[in-house]
Length: 310
Length: 66
Image (cartoon, rainbow over the protein chains, first blue to last red):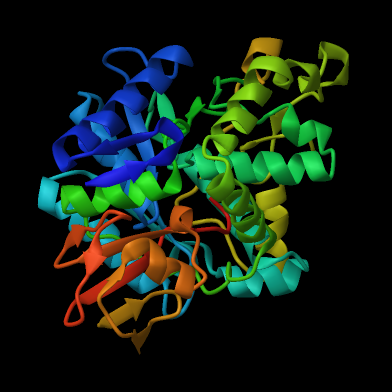
């Protein structure tokens, strides 16, 4: 039995799992994330959200493969990779593993130090670049991530606190493909973090419970704790905050055609970028890393994203 | 009862019986941020925990770059 207070409901195990699948199906349908027959690449971390979204997408009949990115974080990355591999092997799924230290010659700790970024920033930049690249290389129709309602509400909270208009304009459950970027989808936006952990427990999905040591105490977790404190007194607040933003305010932050920068191809790796060299290649340079030996710079198709794609 | 906590991993002992909600208040843990697990199954907020129970309180908050 699990209580979901924002729905004022108690579910038995069977109906809770159905509730999770229904919420994902509803998010996919309402936000036009996927069409029947689409091939999906799932960004897998070994944590509850990415394994749950992979499991549910398969359950809903989508063809979904996984990509795990080894970040080279001692005491964390080897263990999280083990959970990702175990999940894939137990279900006979395809999981590609990219390892930053062995494939690119750097790790998150060294990249953060060299680039003077916080570790989560260097990590996010690496993930976005490599997941996008893999989705394009594999010809997938969409890249799915495990962002849930708590993630989106916390990011929105931070962006509103600092009025980050550019980020607010991109905070959508789906970003359509364009400018060489794959379509990005967040099928878990209608489900909270506690629901995803419960989904894994009830489904028998073994996941990495321990938090990344580099994320402990970061701003994002602080925002989540603040929102959970409000949610405790007023269930449904996170849902109202996030979906209220999508319904009533998100369009205000979408940049006009004149404000959008032209996207070209990175001179080194071919990834889409608004500069001559993309941010990932700059990070590689500062960290003493390198592109894989078999990598080839493939210019992306040039163009601009339409307003509906941002 | 014996309570296993995660992030960081540690174990504490408390006197039972006690309701789940009361235990979380004692530990200053928002219900929205944790799952309570006993014998591999989820325990609802209004359930009673026995003095000999062994339970896990699992944080569900994750952060960092996603």
